[in-house]
Each structure stands twice: as structure tokens, then as C-alpha cells.
Image (tube, rainbow, N blue to C red):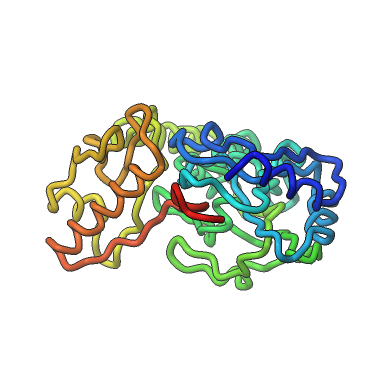
Amino acid sequence: MTKRDGDALLKRLPQVRGRLEANAPLADLTWFRAGGPAEVLFTPADEADLAAFLRETPWEVPVCVIGVGSNLLVRDGGVPGVVIRLGKGFADVSEDPGHRVRAGTAALDVRVARFALEKSIDSLTFLRGIPGTIGGALRMNAGAYGGETKDILIEARAVDRSGNIHVLTNADMKYTYRHCGAPEDLVFTQALLQGRAGDPAEISAAMDKITESREATQPIKSRTGGSTFKNPPGNKSWQLIDKAGMRGFAVGPAKVSELHCNFLINEGGATATQIEELGETVRDKVKATSGIELDWEIKRIGLKAGDAS
């Protein structure tokens, strides 16, 4: 992707109150610290700014959304079109009557869990174990430690590609395991979550237990994208990977974690190509040894190195 690409696209886009940046590096916005640039990166000021932008942007311009990059691999060829990254205008968290929490989709899951603790609201504790934002949780029905998004969601606000606002019920989201069946063009902006009255000491203890478990079993201080593959029905991905002899296997500086082999890590300087090649090698070896095909849980976007846009 040449520098001219982003500058040319920028001239075709509407005026915004937020920020538009051509040829914006994305590697530092992902936990893997790898990958190419966005042709244009858009950080909207608020929901109205986002809606106006989507309404006025030419339909042929590709649009995708990222969060804090905790479960994302951006390929080395970069991302054509516009990458939307929601920021401070979408990060508010507040309490609603009935032990409910209203959270913007840029709010970190852990922040929402801590807010619920402050308000003595239980049932949102599992969010402490999810390294990402509420937006990502909505889009993939994220879950951990016995809970998942579908268990607590009342409704979600979203903007479609035409700039229209929608309010979706839990049923509208068509949730299955680590999957949301809502239209792909929807950009989620807010979620209303249902909790229940809880004891702060018990909630705090449960959150501490989750923290201790993550630190003991996951490479959370490494450059990683979290759980790489979904658990197949009746199986654990890490066990299948371990049985296939792939614990510690590496492609250059991209390596299967020794601590938890459903995590891929960038030991320093790995390209997105190497990380993806490592993941596909793991999938091939698991298929060969167990007959089970692993599905990626990490979202992969953009063009491979050398691909034409």
C-alpha cells in the first residue's frame, strides 16, 4: 500500500469532527505488535459523528472496525479502505436501575467488571478475564470463566453502513458459541448489561481468583492475541495442540506459548505473515493427528504481504 493510496482516499471522505489519518500504522494498536497500515484510520468523536461518516462515505469504500487489538491479527499488506477505531467518545460506563450497567463499546471489559464491583453488581465478574472491549465482546460473544456475553446482554446499540441507528435485543444478536449472527456491517456503539445484586467482598474475591488464574496459566505479559482457536465441541484446543506436539513450536520469532499452547506469541520482530503461518501449521498438524479442524478465534484482517489491493 503506497502512501498515495491513503491520501487519495482521504480526499473522497466526508468531513468529520473526529480524526482521519491516511496510511496509519496499525501494528502498535494490536497486542501482537505486527501488521501493516490502514489506508485510512477514522476515530469518530461520538455516535453522531460515526453515523454521519458512514452515511456519506461512498459505498464502494471498504469499512471495518477494530477495538484495542487484543484478539486481532492485521496482515502485513495493510487494510484497504477505512478502519474505524472507537475512542473516548464511546468509553462511558454508567449504572441503570435494576442492577444494570450501560457501557460504551470502547470501554474495556475489565473496566466494566470493576465498575460493577463498585456498584455491588454481580454476574459481570467474568468480564475481568476477557482482554478486550465491550464492542469486541458483543461481536464475538466473548466469554471466560463460566460466563459469556449472551448471558448478560439486554440490548445493544449499533450504526449500520447507511448511518441508521439500531437497537438490537439479545435475540436479535443470534448468539452461538463465540459467534454473533447480527449483520456484519453494524458498528456497535453501546451495550446494556444485566447483573444482579451481589456482595462486594464475594465479587472482589471472584475477580481476584480470575486474575490469579490468568497470570498462572496464560502468557498475559507477552505479545499475544489471546486464545487463538475456538474449542471444538467436546474438546479443548490447547489439549489437541499439545497432543499434536506443537507446544513451543516456532516460525521465526512467532511461537506457540509454552505456558498455554492455544496462545501464539510474538517473541520480538515477528511479522503477521509468520504468526499466521504458525497458526495454519498448528491447524494442519492438529488435523493430521486428531482429525479435528480448528477454527480461528482471532480475527484476521487486511491483505497478505505482496497482495494487490
